[in-house]
Image (cartoon, rainbow, N blue to C red; front, side, top):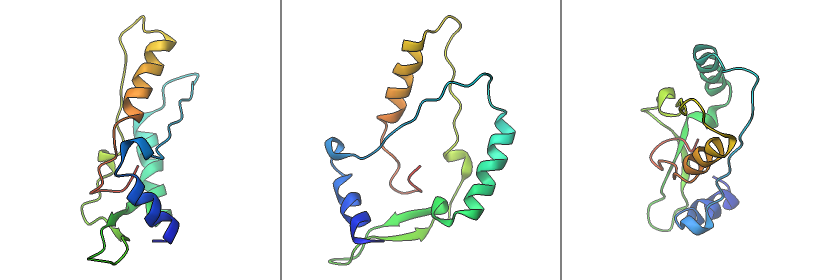
Amino acid sequence: MSDLEALMWGLESDPMLSSTFANLSWLDRSPDPERLRTRMWRATREIPRLRRRVVEGFGPLAPRWEDDPDFDLDRHLRWASLPPGATDLDVRALAVELAATPFDRDHPLW
């Protein structure tokens, strides 16, 4: 883990200093869940960091990246829906709620 990553990791323990961000995209149709899952599975094989978690250093040692032995893609992919008649504001409110949920620091940070 780089020095900057270690600094950001330490700051993340304070919710007011979180660097989490979100992107909300409007699509012309719903994505196919299995196709998305297949592509994300492939991405986790091609980009090793997607399968890594942060492990705290012992004593003065800095945290480090380590493969998550319990990596589960389904922990990272979730589907949400709103009732018929939901407005753009309802979608945005759900996005804010999801983005405000802290990452599980025992698993890859996405």
